[in-house]
Length: 228
Image 1: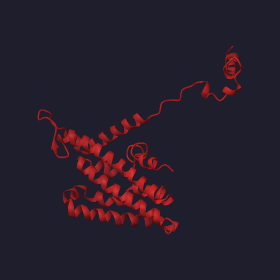
Image 2: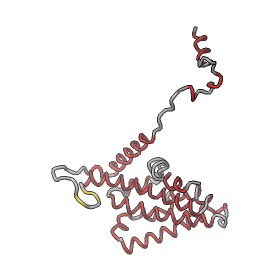
Image 3: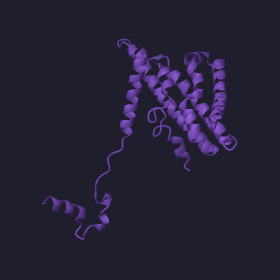
Image 4: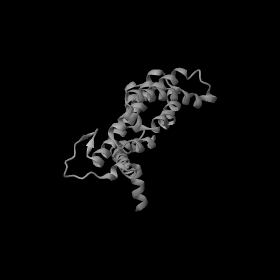
């Protein structure tokens, strides 16, 4: 098993938001500012890594009939820890994230990785899977939040970067702006990842081994004869 592959797959190739279209609710709700996206993303990453490790360690102990309730209890414990830490040390961010911080418990990204990966793999691959997926989620949140904050308020991470002559567009910090920016990001990523069509040549032809010594393809001759 390639540990690097387990880590990097969640960044772009299997990005939870941009490719698998999971976790859309917090992505649209908290990304009015880049700092909110960063806070939500890193909080989710912490919960992903810790829950994947815990579930991987407990996979042989947890009965299959009650695995989902057990997963939720494990995840809820780490979410509670994150909530208490943010409330104590970053109260402004805690207030900005609001109820979406608690809803990390039932985030389909975390439950999905617990069910599909951590419960079937060892600790290290599970930890790397959670880290990669979490950072990929964070990347999307920060990207969407940055675009919305820059065009919606003229700031980035609270720092004014747009000239005064350019009027901020309030649309970008409204729900409609969130849908527009997220849709655009998903479209661009899918366009970049779109594979080129396979080139047609003799090497790709299933009848290549049956070709005549002259190099002519029998299938081509049959089609030409039929057309004649």
